[in-house]
Image (tube, rainbow, N blue to C red; front, side):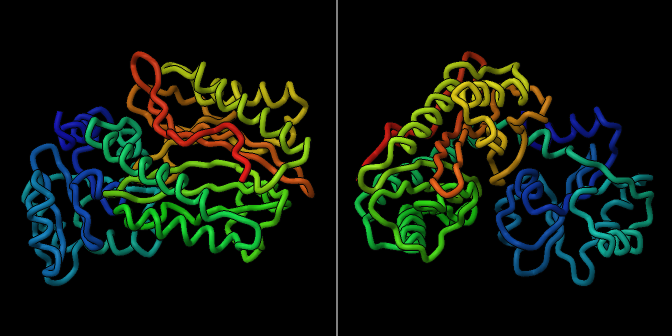
Length: 353
């Protein structure tokens, strides 16, 4: 089924006769457009992509299922003209992406009833098709290669920021267009900070170094975490590393389509809690990835959503001990009808540099 057909089927299920797409991520998903300026209108009979002179040629090439319309004043006024030709009474807009100011502009521009909708595209985006899965695999391969290369760069005396820069340069040399989020390089006591974005701290002998990074490749992301040791770590750090790895592997062994996010999170949480570190695992197990670094479905103690084939989720348990250090180990996992596929291939046994 073509993507536009999937969207229309979902619209029909929700009683939506037309929808305005303004979110850059949903716009990319729906139309294939990779530029920075445009909106789309989708009805059951037609689909329009509205942009300006700079992008009409690009949009014509990329948005094959859409009629490309060049606007000369307001994009929304041009979109309203397209809508009026179909005599529709209601236009749904993406409630999660429309500000108060933008809503006022929509009211001014469109001569139909405006109704909010949430999650229409996001629900579809959770289930990746074969082409999307292949691009995500390529993004992950870039991250895997970058991790392998960074092991020769990390040593006592370099800063976290230097490591972060080297990771980014390596990924971009491989074809990535940028980092998928601010790279986390947290060493020593800072490794107890789950989101310890790279600082000017110098890496020292005995430090654990947590590397959480990823890239954008052809619009899709990768996300991986590895924790390594620079010199011999303490017995306590070794212990929490082993527990975290056990939790990560338990998820890989047990996660299957049909489970809820709550059930998946519990797999890892039970392992860590049984080892006495439950309070040191304060974040959820994982989240979906795709066009965005954080998208559905979530694997958390609060997520009743049932995972299904085509979902790509992260498996990232962690233990964090303030003043001592921390560990996180993260893989990207593809849910399949007959099991799972671990897409991240970097080694997970403790690496001591």
